[in-house]
Length: 274
Image (cartoon, one colour):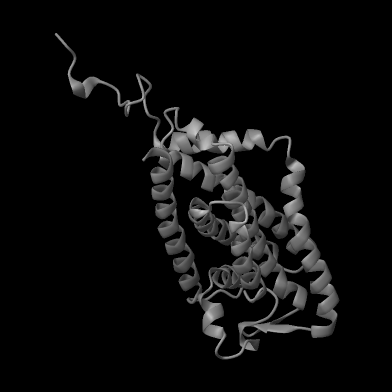
């Protein structure tokens, strides 16, 4: 008597190897990236230097000229004002680097993803694992900023620690966008266009100046950019000045991550399995 179909393990057309669950696939891809970077810790450390130089150079150099600023009714030093903004920006930069240049190399140059999908790994596990690693990389950068803000007495320790989860949300949202845009890239030069968007967005994100200093016509444009929401949310948490408006920031970044995460998964499915 032949066994029933219901008693057979799921194989998804890959021989007799069972297809792992989504969480298992995510963990396997994350572990692969972790092992790959064990000899490249200097690459991770390099992402910490630039925002730290901004903080020291502008926070204390230009801060001596600008003086104190007001944020939601509280007066803070210029260094304390820009510190959380750079913390959010570092999380964005960390995740974008992994889901753009590294992602493109694995997708187009080394064809690594094609080889990974020969195994029982699914597209969901692949995308989830890559995004998880990218968020972890951004979290390393922003976590260093938590220690910096506390060490330089720019934020209360509990407030600085409470701001760290906001950078995880920031990394997830920007990581999903980076993976989606990279799936459309055809050559390395396409990333020059992305840089033309990211750099102005960084400078106009209110990381360095309050929203009120921008012209009236520019303020809605700045408000609509995702990095503004990340910066304002992180700053509010780090300085202990949270309010109901921060829920808008959380909703914005969450919806952004969900939408682009789904699009990235579909794009990878089309590119690699269709």
